[in-house]
Image (cartoon, rainbow, N blue to C red; front, side, top):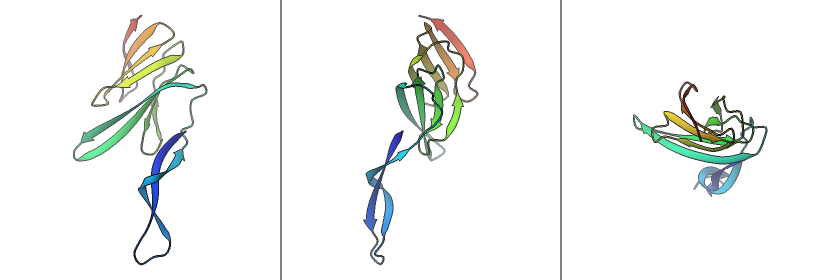
Length: 122
C-alpha cells in the first residue's frame, strides 16, 4: 500500500472541490507480492524533459519487483533468488538494479529486460 498526496482546493467560480497534488494522502494498492516487504526504493529519472519515477521493492517472497511509482503499475519482476530478498537499489539512470538475498547472493539485473547480469556470493 503506497500513499500519494492530494489536497482539495476551491476554484473561484465553482462550489465543488477540485483535487490537486498537495495535502491529503490517498492510498495506491500495488498487488503482486505474497510476503512482507523488506525494503523500497524510489528513483526519479529525467530524460528528454520528462520525469519518471520508479519503485523497486525487496520482498520475503524472493521476487523483487519494479513499478511505475506514479501509478503503482507493475513493470517487471527480477526472478532468480532462492531466498528472501532483503535489499534492492536502482542506479541513477534506472538501467540497472541490484538485489541482496538471504540465499547469500547479490545480483545485478538489467532493469529494462529483467535479465540477471551478475551474481556474487556473499
